[in-house]
Length: 254
Image (tube, rainbow, N blue to C red; front, side, top):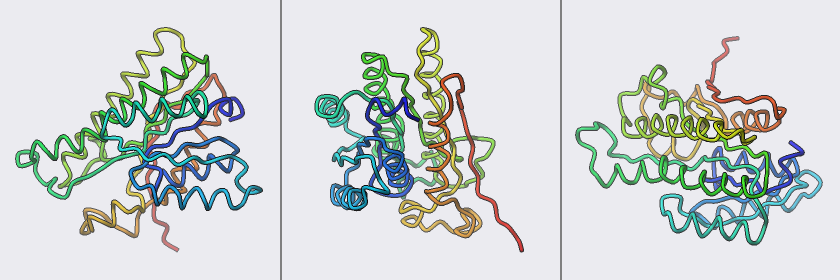
């Protein structure tokens, strides 16, 4: 983890859920963290909470308002980060969206397709381009972690709705693996990891109120569970790469 403190850690979708938990954990480990999200008020509240206890949170958190679905905003934001805070050592691609009309792919509108793929796939790609460019220019042994979804793995996806979201997450898996293979060809020390959490307690899951048995609210991960594994992945030695990790909730009967 110490080697990653040479640069800035960028977390997208940092205003709630997994993104918020990851940002908090990174600041707790002493990193300089930039949180990206559309909701400036949520980011500011997180910033104030983390800065209130320097002993518990020795790192720093900087809130940046950015819509991951808009390419120009991403490019401008990363340029500002590199100019004002320095090179990037960690990127956690966490931002993602779903749409309520995602029932059947044959009925999904082109607009909804652009919304879901624009954030989940294209936005992630542009963020990764910017982060890896910064790592390479500054000779940083960085790490890109993409927070995917269990629904992005066909063998695990038993959902009967949100086929567009699942398609985007599967495309994201292929995209991330392709990037990992691309950079491995020129012996870079940059790591690329895909993680696949199962159902996680978050605003997005509450918003859609999925009926059981499609989604069981009593059988879900906490954002801090996912954050804990991301920290573990970042803490692996330079010679070890966790290329993919599936995280599923279990229920204990006592």
